[in-house]
Image (cartoon, rainbow, N blue to C red):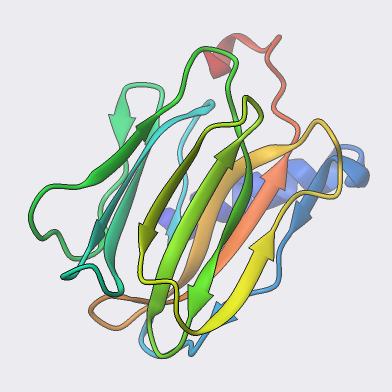
Length: 163
C-alpha cells in the first residue's frame, strides 16, 4: 500500500512542473528492507528515538494529526519537534556509518531537532526549489534505519485536500 502512495506522489510530481520536486541522494549502508514514510498534507511533527545517545533507533513523522508507522524501533522517550503553523522542514542533515548515527531536521523558522551521536560520515539534504519542503522519507531498515533519502516538493496549500 505504501508503494502505491509513493508511486501516486511521484506520478503527481512528474505531471506537475518538474522543478518543484527533487530528491536527495540516499545515504547509509543500505542493508535490510526498504521503507517509505508518506502521508497527506504538510508534515506537522517529527519524533526520533536514539539508542543510549548513540545511533538513531527509530523515527516517525506526523502529517496533519496522523502519525506514520515507526521506522526502526521505539526505545524510551522520543525527541520531538512539533512544527508551528506555516513552518516546514527545509533541511535534513546528520551522520551515518552502518546505521544512521545522527539526524538534524531544520525548519524555515530557524528551529531544529538534533538527535544521535555526531560520528561517522556527514550528509546534508535540502530541496532544489526555494519554496519546497520535506514531503517524505524513504530508505532501508535492518532493525534501526540503515539508509535515508529525502524527497522534497512544493506543497499546494490552496488545495482543500492538504488541510
